[in-house]
Amino acid sequence: MAVGVLASTTLAACGGSGTPVLNWYVNPDGVATFEKYAEECSTGDYEIAVQVLPSSATDQRVQLARRLAAEDSSTDLMNLDPVFVAEFANAGWLTEVPEEKATEITDGEDYLQGAAETVVWDDKVFAIPLWANTQVLWYRKSLAEAAGLDMSQPVTWQQVTEAAAGNGGTVGVQANRYEGYVVWLNALVQGAGGEIVGDTEAGKDASVEIDSDAGRQAAEVIQALVDSGAAQSDLSVSNEGTVLGPMWSDPGEFMVNWTFVYENYRGLIGESGGPADEQAFEDLGWARYPATVEGQPSKPPIGGIDIGVGAYSEHPEWAMEAAECVTSTEAQVDLALEDGLMPSTNSAYDQVVAEGSYPADLIELWRTSVDEGGPRPKSAYYAMISGALQATWHSPTSVDPDRTPTESADYLQAVLRGEALL
Image 1: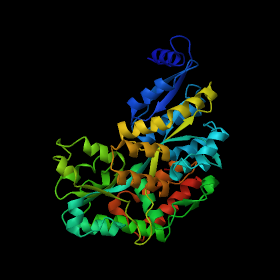
Image 2 (image 1 turned 30 degrees about the vertical axis):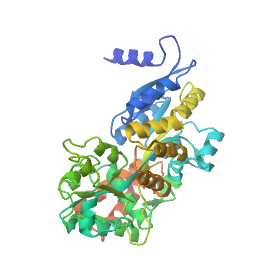
Image 3 (image 1 turned 90 degrees about the horizontal axis):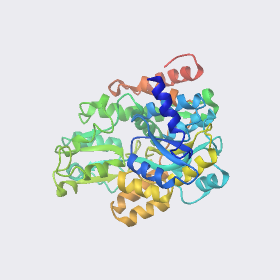
Image 4 (image 1 turned 45 degrees about the vertical axis):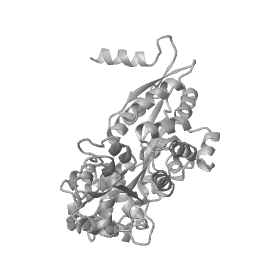
């Protein structure tokens, strides 16, 4: 078996005619579109081969980190969850983006601010944004109307929870012990004006700030949902997929989730797990991510995918050229229209709006949410930060505003200092 693996690796490094092959490691979302652009962006100098990573962002990180730590020369391009850019750049695993492209990303008017911020580490640009994800509040219009909520105005987590509980509905969140739970927690803390960690470029000496009023307000939101009767029965193991089903079981739900939801439900009209018909689909509503504190703007989560070039690639200039090609406006538009993965640039968004496949107000909500949203902490120690938070904030049924922020801060500080292990 080892000989077979070695042989396949050797073949992947060279095209059939002796043309160098650039390996592009991609996440499983939008693979058909990635394969299309791998072919279109290949040139007479090189071919691009798509290699599919596991579905979990954590598993993606592990596979890429192992290769790069071993200085693997066959890792040419890679799809990176934004939270891993800082870690990989700090480790010297990513090639810095050339100055002209870097300036276009950070100082130009095309890239959305939230997307541009994810690729910067130590004042340098180490990746190119491809698609930018964000979360909004999805809901049944009929449920919101029954609750008397004016969804044209900002709503709070308290209002949403009370509206669902008082009208037989539920609230869908991601609260399993995984990265999605940290996404929710980070948005709650930032929505209250705080940060989980500050001065992240100080590494293990970063300032742990979750033991704060903002941390306690985040805990109050979680505790209130648990105690309300609106929490879904599988709350402690919920994820982006499990929360989809209750939307179409009357009276429905309020749910925070990523941009894929609209295309997902549209494709399920008349099928199990989806709206019964077109009229039922029209009952789907959307609004800005709920506010943690009334009167204070929410900070919608930011996700997506950035394209990095491996520092040990044998063909770094070609790999960077290929990275610019696969992140083109055309590629971003195709990912949006074919896969529901929204762009990182205004120019691509404008084309998606013009195409008319999505409601214009939904597109603008996504664009605004990315531009005004909040990234998770940019730290070379992010994996440790996330793991420590998951360990101390899970299960959501155990969250206590008087205890959890303090205990999590103490544990996170100890983990960063090397005084405790995850």
